[in-house]
Length: 374
Ligand code: SF4
Picture 1 (cartoon, protein in one colour):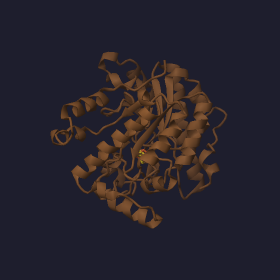
Picture 2 (spheres, helix red, strand yellow):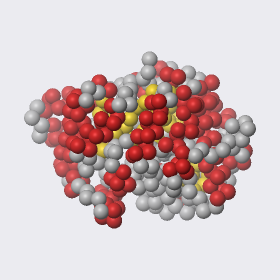
Picture 3 (cartoon, helix red, strand yellow):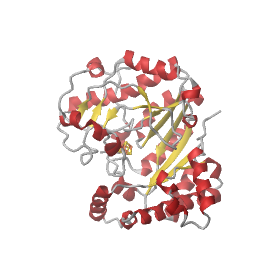
Picture 4 (tube, rainbow, N blue to C red):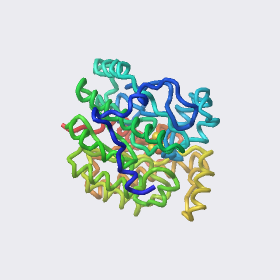
């Protein structure tokens, strides 16, 4: 894959739309990279303590970036097991990264969901959502679609782009909702013009856990390299977008020097918010990461996943290090840590020098509302 293929957007026709068959297809071919049966709508999300949005817009079931730590296959996609089997997917968790099923477009259904979100009384909304729709919560809004048939691949890529652009246009024109774009892909650069037209209603961010391309390749094997993401973030800043960054999740190999390098690069972007969370990986994925690391000659610290205590020690230490570095770099007011709920256990608190202060600090991060441009 060339860098050019990553940033070259698929063409739209003169109406700004891809071929119409892609938008309304209801009978998907049974292939792991194809069309899903249910159309995409704006739906309430299930984030806890993230302060990312109130709603989510997801363009697909599955994600070609194949991140090893991704919570989506175990938490959400696995519930679709019976339906996914019809597409030849036997194990939605183990095959994560191999399937991308784009949702069809049904404009009336989308508009109904948009109206429902727009008319939700503020009192019914979680206060940390900033009345925003996130693109996306269970997939990436900008991913390269791989399909053995070139024509089908083009059709799918056009459809993916159409879903994002058409829905954004409708949100901009027919609602007062905010939008948060969160991606790992520089393909988003093709839509900066559209993002810009939202003014303060849209924030653009990327996940950038490290600047080390080799490390990212182990944990996010099919996602674009961190160097490309940093370049895209710089371009976004230059384009006048409101930028945020998610150092999420950072890895055990991200030592102080690595975190300092990443945060220094991030600070130059003057992001409105810098989210951070340490990786929390399920046991079954550790072997896969070890195999990938060994194949690439990258030394890993997977011993931190051996026990609950060793992971907690690692996580608390990573959060503390990032916090200290943010202070050192003068960006602490923009830092938004995401400590896992399990870090609030009394047994862990009791291991801290000042348990009460520790728990109070966690509470602060869990209640924090992320910044929105004024
Ligand atoms: S980009 Fe996001 S949704 Fe896709 S695999 Fe990675 S963590 Fe999961």
